[in-house]
Length: 344
View 1: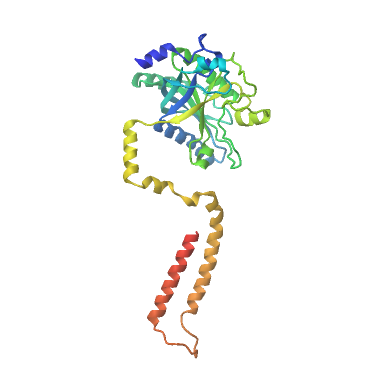
View 2: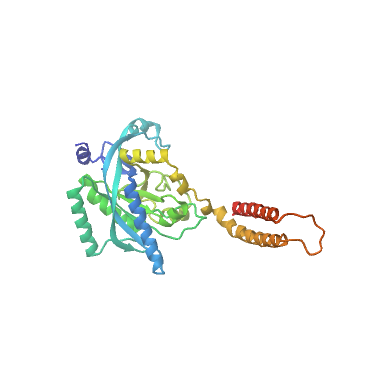
């Protein structure tokens, strides 16, 4: 009943009882469930693997998001809001989008463009949407696609942005679905950076209405101010002023949280699996040198052991039993191997 009332109220639509900026940015947060996140990242990674197997660039992929809107109260403490408007802007009823599932689509794209213009793909989307509406309480609330561009460790930003084609697609969805009580969101994934950083690199966006213009000059989708136009385009694309970024958070059900807490409380398997110091950058850089050093010392160790086999004929030495010599050699070899293993 609460969800139906929210869909009828449509607080994300532009209304005369709120400021134009509040209406344009009414949806501020996207909550993503772990199963949806796992399916999104797996699908985006499959596009990377497929392109590399064919000897070409990674392939962009696309899918649909299943979820629902959720109303919640937030406090606005933005420095750009004047004191006269602070009282009216506090305790606003903003909307959160909850993404519970994701469904890949048979679509492959190329750089900065993923278009669902094939009749087969459109029929597939219609059949999938109809089936979901009959079997699930949630509706299709957005779409995702990947930007598998070259990753550089020196780059301080990801490739998560909306191109001009993406904005046309997202604006078309918003105009169609928002008035029906189903606000739409776009999620962009950077799969190569996700692999390099060992964490999900994705961002969620919505487009401004065509008639909206930000009152803050040079305001980027994340709310930052970048004066250099080339830098703005490099980070957010040529249409940087036509959309805004939403906060992304993750959640899990109470039962899943209880299971995870029990596992982490009783076992150390998560720490064991996640602790891989050899994958750290510093370890990788020193690994080859450590292996070469270990090989040289093992060669010297072998020569030293050979010298211990016995004294030269005629040498005046104190008699030592062969058992004591063998025991000493074993202790020395064991200590040397342990030290070399610690180095690597």
